[in-house]
Length: 242
Image (tube, rainbow, N blue to C red; front, side, top):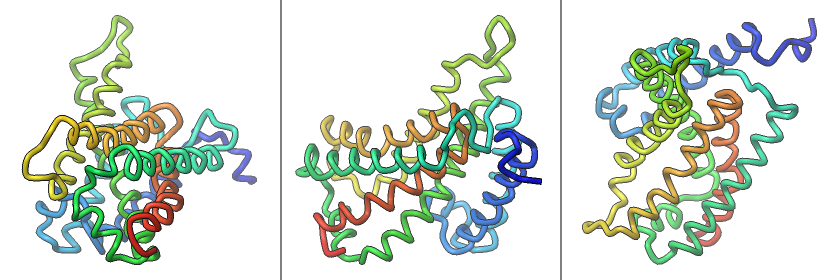
């Protein structure tokens, strides 16, 4: 059978996507935790990271199936091309935020990272990190938060309201980013720096959540990972040797 003839939301495509996420995500988790909370809970032990990662992913898939969220790409004629195009646009947006609008606010540790690590290392690191962050923040956190809200928050027709999706999308990005970017924060936070955090780290994650909701998790995952294909060469060239 021609796999391209299968509907994008068919059980086969969903199982294939789920299996791929579990396999590659577990391999990445065996090497690094990335997320501060995830790493703290697992104590830096690789096998514990893998077990917890698999458990969280399975919970996320369970909740996604019960909230109308889908794993496979859907409602797009050319999902891969669209996802890469979004990745390019986000890379240009982040470049503008970091190197034009808020250049004077960039934390020294943030700038030093780009100065001290070659392009190849940064590409691998951020693409792998993006892959698993999307699984932890969107597939697990967002799906689970939405499912929990759906237990008590339904419209007159018994459906989860759109507002609940937006709440889950925002929480799934804002909470992890506020925790994970804390090491880069200056000693005294100012409103303008908090605006930078929102513009730089939270808005893009809200976009990934929206893509997951409207066009499938695979679309969000591809867009997120592909962003670093474009972003890392540009920002590394400006802030330090690539």
